[in-house]
Length: 373
Image (tube, rainbow, N blue to C red; front, side, top):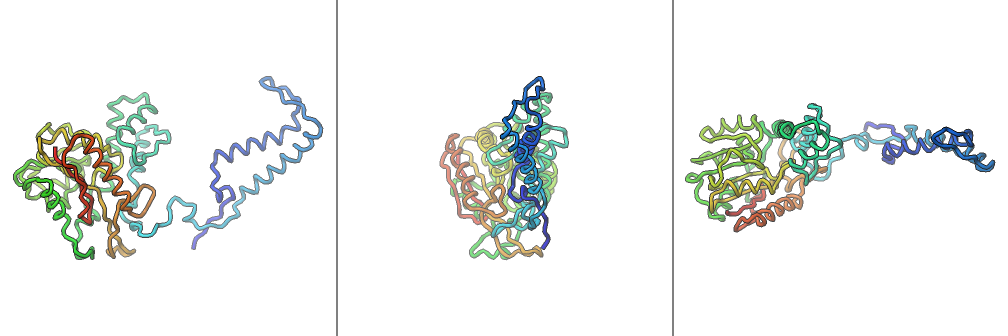
């Protein structure tokens, strides 16, 4: 096992700003007994009684010695303990999974830095949406116009999602259900079709369908391939290129769910968005406003949140599945976290006036939330 040697300060996790403050105080104590009574113009150092002066001559050097000792690399520790990479949690997604490689927030912030945008310590965490990020960027970069900020942030988000999700990579929906080894499991689209039937949505061959966040369409093709009138929307140009090859009869638009400006109001019979509403910087409420706008009266709405990940060994072989959604800062999926996001979507659907709102948990692949306009 590889080890690093670290100082006591590092071992205790003392922040650098605290260490700097302590050093300044020690330097002041070191100099104080020798500059008593000196007038520096801006301030005058008070005269110290002989007893205090004597104590300071000992206290200052003693504290400096302790400070230096605490800086000596004296502790052996496993590299993983102090490195950026955390130990895997039980039932963690494999370290080489696309879900564990560079995080979407990191890619977005790195892209903004590359464009010389001041992000001022902004952290992209759950609850922060695309509009929040643009407002923070505006505060920190007053020289940039609103149009330029919008362009930079949207471009950074597209780069991140293209990098992680555009190309056909691992996807449990594309794996044969026999490999998943889940008792009684059916193909993923069967559960979606069952849910649509519950919502009273007719056969998709005879209606206008909008798929928001369609991605590369490799998984969606089996469901959407027979759709007579399909419009696909995604923020990634590269993903759309893949999707066009899979669904040549569909119409594709580039854009985010929060602003479906190229889709006419009241024009769609079914709005679906699978595994998109949990995405980084996603504005759930604004996207549902847009869903309501583009749907015709009585139109159906279906959103899903992922609830399954592949469990693989080091050689890449599938050895099972893991249920839930991966919370920020974690490596293991959590069903509770998936439910929190799903219930928030359900709450917003009710709040915005959708009818017959239902949360459907029958699918092992994802949690469906649906409604009618």
